[in-house]
Length: 305
Image (cartoon, rainbow, N blue to C red; front, side, top):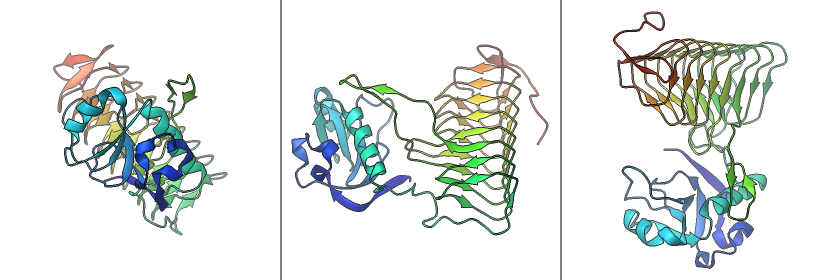
């Protein structure tokens, strides 16, 4: 379970961004987390009726629109709902205030005190920010930047001029007309023995970390969006773009120059042919090709593994 602690915990009505919500008197806040986590006194938001199943055991404090308060109360009977005009804007402003005030800790998925192993191999002009965990046997090519909140597990290789843990594109125009970028609180976790080619960009997650599974091979010039989950032993060829919150199952193969739409899922062992544009979910073991990608009987998009 991923969450972001506030240190020290505080009362919600002590935060200037939440001062207008009169229901908050005496309500404490311990941290920030995704919707539907069973974390008492953790703040989140919900500005629409969720699609699919919800966790009725959720005990969070949820900022909700006035118009949906009654309906969301039925979906989340154990949660504390705070009705406000624009919950997303209020949530973003609150997270930004906490972050700029140095009150938010890094993702709970990182070790408490991140460290860098003594035996790592670094090329020239590598930048590693504070708050990075790098395990033994990691190799990082020249000119690469590793941002705070990243965990490179043992044996990971990163090619030259890559950026790991940068911020992705996002924008929300609030009811006040102000455009806000959603804060990227989460990090990037690259599993044991994974390999990233030269000039790759891996975007850190917003409220859930971007993950690349153990043994996966990511080719040169790939862009991995925020919150993407890539399983173990995936082969992803050069020039592939993966949109935010997409999922790629274990041992899937993505050929040269593919585009995978955000929030789509590619099942375990699937094959995606060269130059394909994936706009819909791909079932496990299936082969797809084209723009938009359609099912083919058999495609060998990469080497046998």
